[in-house]
Amino acid sequence: MLEKVILAPYYFTLKLRHFLYDKGIFKVSTCEVPTICVGNITAGGTGKTPHTEMILRLLLHSDDWAYSNIAELSRGHKRMSGGFQLVSRDGNVNEYGDEALQIKKKFPSVVVAVDRKRVEGCDLLCHPEKLKTYKRARSCANVEIRKSDIIVLDDSFQYRSLDSYYKIILVDYNRPTYKDNLLPFGRLRDLPERLICADILIVTKCPVFVSDEERLQWAEKLGIRDFNPETCTGIDKEGRSKTLLFTSINYKPLEPVYEQADPRYSYSKHLILFSGIAKDTPLRSYLSDNYTSIKSCIRSRKILRQSWLPRKKIARG
Image 1 (tube, rainbow, N blue to C red):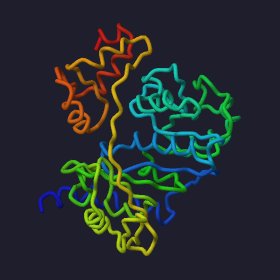
Image 2: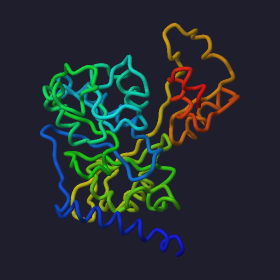
Image 3: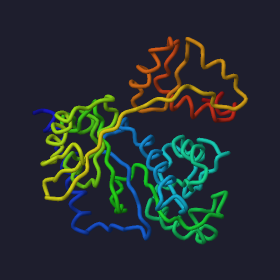
């Protein structure tokens, strides 16, 4: 009861914010090309980046989009640059953020951009000729890109100013939203009722096998009735068709980060784990089967960011 009283201002603030957007009092824009939102209502740890990569991989291998101009747009969390930036493979994490740079290195043919203002970012990706004159893109190194045909939006579900064509919302199998609470008493940064806005709900980090009975239980808890485990579809509270999927993590063998690295190190039985993952428990559990962890860096994202800084900045820190 005490938690509900303390969280009441936060809860009603979120309710009011969504009401103002839903009623059109706050402006909502759409992009002129198809957009796919990958988001959640939990503060980190649901697997947005791996699923964003999975969607990009599916698009690149699909008959409809393989030869199109695919783009990915994110905020560029904790980057030190400002405005709109096109991510370069030879750039660094301070310019773009670690996740955007990782995606660009994995998908060089995809245009990866970062911009806090997603509406303007989408407009620039659709009209790249504006990059040469647009004020917020004046520090953008490379402006020679083609117009995007489809844009994948990483973590834009709470960015209500931009309405995506297709919304994919992730829920952590190990921390169900219906058992969680709003920050700071839980990990929810948005209202659980907003899951109804999703076109696809994905329960992430599942065991390799999830029974049909458990899938039905998840569907019921997430407000989906008449769920069919074979088609993965059901009906939500507003009578709309809803897709519910379940994904699990499959780790690949270790490989060197740099080409010149000695691959024999991957056969060692000891490791020091650096991780920028919000919740790296599954990774540590997987590694523990074959390795003895000497050190695990808890605030490793900060450490990794510092490793990109010049020596003088590290010394001053």
